[in-house]
Image 1 (cartoon, helix red, strand yellow):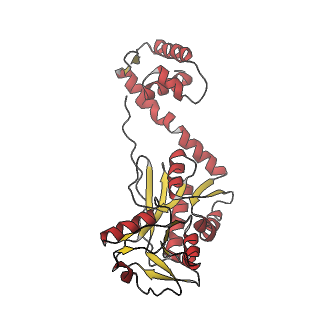
Image 2 (spheres, helix red, strand yellow; image 1 turned 120 degrees about the vertical axis):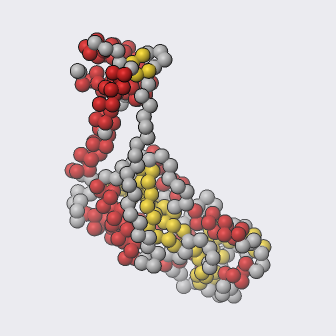
Image 3 (cartoon, helix red, strand yellow; image 1 turned 180 degrees about the vertical axis):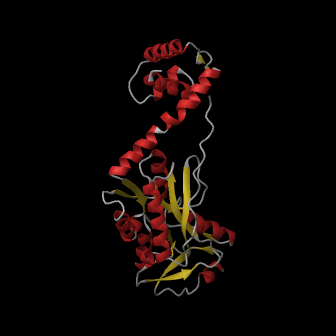
Length: 310
């Protein structure tokens, strides 16, 4: 059997037709050429592999597809593994603060095992990371975890971080609970964008307490929330991360009864050895840096591929 014919048959069977296969074959080939080579394959075998209209694999076609599918389907993953074995590449997305203050320790440890490691560190926002993961722009993202993953995405929780309310140092407020007695607050409120997990979680718990408070200023980062509060522009909601809220001009009030934010990792597809080692190092760093918040969660089992239509 001609191996090139088998490759073309793989695409025809996978996408259920010659015209659909031509749109997905990763190199230029015309529909008549594929049709002719499928006829040649059937002629050489002396059997019919599929019905053309409507498309349907015959029993021999299903048997042949079952035999060749694992090989051709695994070539993309094999390519990445072979490339990683020589010059492994890690494309990591996280907030600017995380990339600047926390990732260098992790990457330094990784380089002891991967001396030729190529790093691509991309700062951004939560919604961007989700898009970049789906599009294959990044391999791993450090993000707040709220919803369950979909499709081939996997996730692992690293830390559970409390929320705090930031007030100016000279503010009379000593406890957040004293604010909630007003039920409807008119003080300026500074927070991350409304679609961020931190802001959504904060307002969800405010509603549960029966408190109404409108966001008046949107900050692009946790550090910016802190800076705005320190300059007297209002009160702010933030994560209780020391690096994000350290400022002599503010006080951080605990938000008792508010749900903490789970921060973790998301990735798409199977774990390569490099991704696995990176995740283990991030877990180790979280345990060392935030022992009271760290979540000791095992790596998830590989997701079973969905059943393919024959």
